[in-house]
Amino acid sequence: MRRRRFGSRLGLMVAVAVAGAVVGPVSAHAAGTASAGATSVRADFDGDGHTDLAVAAPWGRIGGSNGAGYAGAGYVSVVYGSSKGLDTRHRQLISQDSPGIPGAAESDDWFGWGLSVGDLDGDGYTDLVVGAPNEGVGSVQQAGSLTVVWGGKTGLSGGTVVETGTMLDQTRPRNATVGDFNGDGHPDVAADNHLLSGPFTRTAGAASIGKLAFDADYDIDTPPHTDDVATGDIDHDGITDLVALIHTPDEEGPGVGYRVEYLRGTRQGLSTPVELTRADGALVPGGSSLGIGDVDKDGYADLVIGRPVDGHGEESVEPALLGGQVGVVYGSASGPDTSRTTVINQNTAGVPGVSEKGDDFGLGVSVGDVNGDGYADVAVGTPGEAIGKVASAGGVALLRGGASGLTGRGAVSFSQDTTGVPGTAEKNDLFGGYTALTDTNRDGRAELYVSACGENTSTGGVWAFRSGGTGPTASGSVSFGPVGLGAPYTDAHFGRGFAR
Image 1 (cartoon, rainbow, N blue to C red):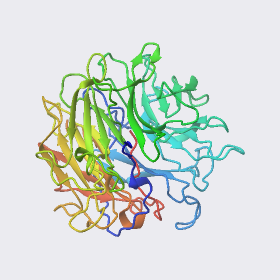
Image 2 (tube, one colour):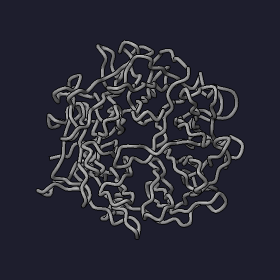
Image 3 (cartoon, one colour):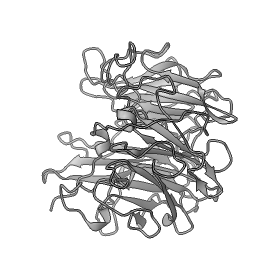
């Protein structure tokens, strides 16, 4: 029997949509390494105590006037925080044409695809790690590169290329993430196929660079593809662990086998990857999106795996996968405990909506405590969701953590047709493609950020939902996009990821 195939239309679809954006001060966002307590590392690039937001637009046009430039050169928009939240007047556009940033904007570099944050040089300011998976290096096309843009008193400025690929060893930084994997107090960077070990300096970059394999049985003829990565202290030993969702082409034909790999952080560094299996030897299924946080408040970080794609009718799937699902593997002193799992889809009691083909429930997974009760909650994007008869307008669901783990009880959902939410649900908006949960105003409650890459004929946009005593609310929600930020907008797909 063929294995089912995961994948996402989000990365393949050229979306078409038209809607307005409301720009104004909103609560700040920063996504980072999730801890067992479901608290993200703040992205405070200027050290003023307020969280800042970095939004990816890796397909944005850079160079020349808007509408010209190099298609797919890519950029990152940064909006700085203030006592009133995000201040869209205090903003910054970072590209390879920006002063102090190495390189030059070129077509299809995809600068910005793979964003992460951490204080890499230990100066007290958060730095921004930016991937450019298609960057050419000399005569090597699509060699890939990884650049650190340094934080400081005035914000982000200057950059250092800390890694470039070669003909035989490409850099694949689409899923860069930061963590201290050996507990030495210096952050390290995992970038799909390479591990950059700290400490970092602005002149020399990483202390060392080594290979990183997520598959212990790596086959050079069928190299695995990394779908997503996340970091957290799953075994609660004080050292960051690394988890990856990967897949390898299946010999049976069009199907692919998706799986979860766990690399424990130790004083000697990351352990050999362990493929997660159930007691009967069956694989714990992987997916397309991954978050880590303590949803049952037992002190151990849990894996939250988004499995969005059901084949869209191309092949039959088991009923639990129709429309997509979210799976949880709970943490323990020995790492992920595959005997304790939870599966939730749109047919789960309490979850708004109904499971239907192509909903993509499970894309855009993020983890954070939205109501300050100490339990991590989970945002789940459904960018393929039809709103009424409007195909792929998209939505987002918020699932609650509790003593017994993740549950459908008390779940809420939002779309652009929800009262109070700016805009209008339109075909191929793909609202919910990416999400972020983080406590931006330091009130103990994470706010919800949602992107729609297809908004305004693939211009893209971001929506911000403040959190009250019960979590995110549509009341007072706002949206902003590249037009309001003074950034290139034609085919930008603004919001194709947040720094984390």
